[in-house]
Every structure is written in structure tokens, then in C-alpha cells.
Figure 1: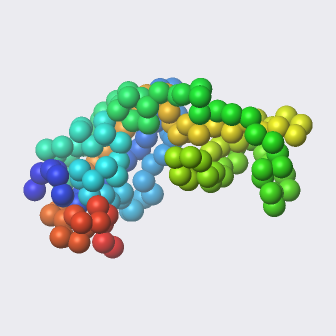
Figure 2: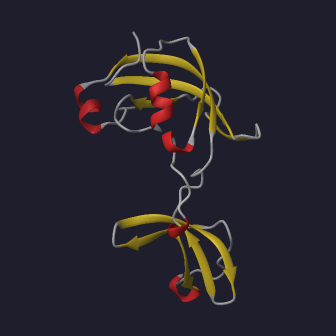
Length: 154
């Protein structure tokens, strides 16, 4: 079976940045499973996998606009440290859920200076070109429930 909309796909992958450093990889023997066409993986990778079958290897370079988008400096802002109620020591790299006018958003602490904290709502991989090496380990038809939920039933 070939990868197409509403197929359940299992892939083993390694993700590297432009310098060749490994950013992420599927754990050995635990392929990532997703419903193809449900928006569960970045568009550039999903498009590259379309039409592939179990056993195929795929290498693809995904530009930011087909991954997590370009960095947007407007998504950084300084907030008072007092907003981190209950957190004793706010440090760079910490991630928090923030309530915004657009709903809940994940923010990363970019800097801490005195009583001010700079938070960044950009995805950590925004602005980066991503290099995937993928092995398609399985492709099957999704169940009606998997199609409805857009998630794989385990």
C-alpha cells in the first residue's frame, strides 16, 4: 500500500539541522505513527512521503515555510517576573503555557534580566531548514475512528 490521505503511516526518522547536528530521532524500535493528511506532521515531510510504501527510504530537506515557518520577532515580549507565580527560579529555556487572546500558547523563556523575563512564542524550530532521513516501516488503511479523530489508535 502506498502512503495517501487517511493511511496510518509508521516511520523511523532522524532529524538534523543545517549543521548536521541531530535534533530529534524516533526511539529504536518505536516508529512514529500518524494519520497521513490529518496535519500531524509538518507539510514538507508529509508531501515528501506521499506515494511511498513500506520499506522505502526518503531523505528530504524542508525549508522553514514548509515546516514551522519563519521566526517572527513580534512573538517575543518582555513580561514581569511576577507573572511566573509559584516558580522559584525562572531560567532561560524553560517552557510555559500562557493564556493569550488567541488561546493557550506555549512560550519559551529567552532571557531573564532582573525582574523582567523575555518570552518567545515562536516554535523552537521556526526559521530552521530541517533535514530528515526517514524509513517507512509500515503503511495501512486507517479505521473510521482514526480518520474521524485524526490520530492513530494504539
